[in-house]
Amino acid sequence: MRASLVGTGYVGIVTGACFAHSGHDVIMVDNIKEKVDAINAGRSPIYEKGLEEMISEEVRRGRLKGTTNLREAVEFSDITFICVGTPALPDGSQNLAYVKAAAEEIGAAIEEKDIFHTVVVKSTVAPGTTLGTVKPILEQTTGKKAGEGFGLGMNPEFLKEGDALNDFLKPDRIVYGCVGEGAAKMLREIYAPFSAPVIEKDCTTAEMIKYASNSLLAARVALIDEIGNICKALGIDVRDVAAAAGMDRRIGPHFLHAGIGFGGSCFRKDVSALAWKGGELGVETPILSSVISQNDAQPLRIVQLLTSRMDVKGRRIGILGLSFKPGTDDIRDAPSIVVVRSLLEKGAKVVAYDPMAKENFSKLFPQVSYAKSASEVVASSDSVLVLTEWKEFADPSLYGNKPVFDGRGVTRTANYEGVCW
Ligand code: UGA
Image (tube, rainbow, N blue to C red; front, side, top):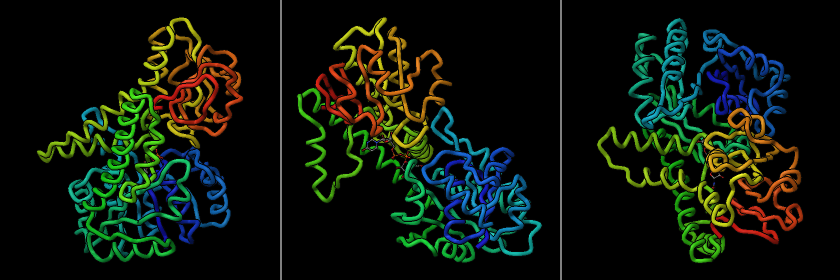
């Protein structure tokens, strides 16, 4: 099939590269020329394990290319995916400006086409957005009816950073919603190379499946963190508790790692947006609100633990790990931000190391000293906080007898305390 994708951010470029890898002809659209040039030169505009190799291979094969010309991309393809960002607004709702702008431009391009074209929303949008916002824009700009003059679909993504190619190529499930049989046929065809259960529903159900999935995952982490805080007060290890509780098949073992809370660009944004949507519909969402407030407070547990053992004013505190999880340089909503800000406010001198996230973090915190290795952090600090579970932080010999406060259950050393154990 011939597919175009608007937006070369995380979702867009991973989806585009994987569609090309599975045999489709793909054209990526972005209005930032440098990103398009990077793709055409076989480079990835973002870091994700294995992605650059895949892009360079598919560009070489001629199955993947980039353009700044959206009209040309719609003309070239049968189906266009909207993969632009939906950043959070202060009230928890989403800024749909990029989605709306993309829909308008795509609609104008479809209007000039004689052949049936399908538009699919892949950006994470609150339930009701595809039918309530995108559909009217497309109908107005094309002068055609969705499901008749053009196809419309909603197809959420379930990629995890650091393992996105695997998640895309071997998904647990493929979810989409459609208006009309034309869109359904095209979505079935584009996903034909992937072997996974397919959930074909309406657009609002597809949108809600994405929000339900992320809210359930976020709530699970928030709950095990809260249980972990009680374990700590009892002097027991939450990891023993989680392992045994997870043996119940109804609970399962995954996503029960307690620590300093979840980070990343998705969980907080999506839980907030679902709570906002509930409010708009007059439905109370006390659990979703608690997930956010519990998780906002969780990173500070490690600071409280440290300050209960020492006065940090004027002391050098070492930080190992800045990214919100291993395998990425992403620091969006990372617990490290909350921890470092609090330590600096308390007058500590912070020295930090992360194998990938230093550059991003130093833009936010230029006043922190950045070490070249974990051992340099340990050698130059009074106490060490481990905030991301990078494998290289596991070796106990790294720490000698230095006091270590572990926020992720990474290691166990001679002079050691965990945040929930
Ligand atoms: C998450 C979801 O896992 C994906 O399915 C979803 O597609 C994606 O959001 C999205 O909506 O784009 P991601 O944010 O990349 O993916 O990372 P996760 O691996 O889910 O981890 C999120 C955070 O939760 C991390 O900070 C991690 O350290 C934390 N976490 C995870 C825990 O604290 N404990 C756990 O047991 C699991």
